[in-house]
Image 1 (cartoon, rainbow, N blue to C red):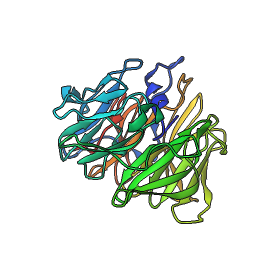
Image 2: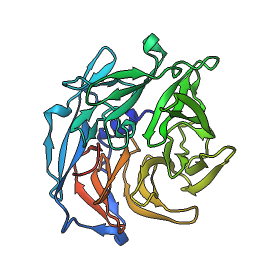
Image 3: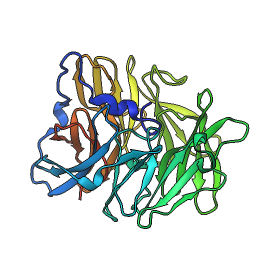
Length: 347
């Protein structure tokens, strides 16, 4: 699956192409090179398929050099990925984003989960466990400083649905959840209010396969291998009671993968097939800009790794093409050719 709910297939984009593809080519209108940039280090995660060990390090900006960080290494044990500690921090192994670690800038700690599962500003993160974990099934919230791991009451297996809540995103107003169980993903998006422990349905029409939350709405793209949804169509559903799902953007003949949101809140979307990869910035139902494209024959068509980071430099994206920076003025900069996933902002 792509995006938040199961990015293991995206991580497998590290696999070689059967025919050498063209490099990802920024559109002429946004082509740029990194000049006069503020020097900073971008945390990234690395994962060499099919190895199970996840690691990370820092990419210098603007130089692009990668430096491995030993404390970013996560090891797998008894169904968990865990940090070196202390304290030892745990996350689910094999059911979270394969190849993902997040970097908590405030605490200077590497976390064993995707950065979308980290609380805004850091200090906490969350993860979900399926019913195979028995009494531990449900949503867990972890304190980064102490390592305290708390199971949220009532977040376990949904009675009568044979499904469990799965992580979507940790945001200011709560933790967004989807459901997955017997028969596959469920339709709907839920929000966990950490102050009350209450879980509320906030998006009845949302298809939980690859959904992302931003700007008061849920966004997802139709793909051939996903649940019922028109391939090549980006959908938006406002997180208000009774709001319908609306088609927002279309690339006929391609599948869509919602990567995240840029510094201005615009949606970044990958459109792909077995021989085409495009990066789009969608501003409205009538305005979209193609930022880059590539052609070739791909063993794993989707080449961008879900999740982006925003800071004063702009918006950072990663994938098998390397690390890119989308600057506030719209220029797309290639920073590093190494296949990596963004793990946090550049500081």
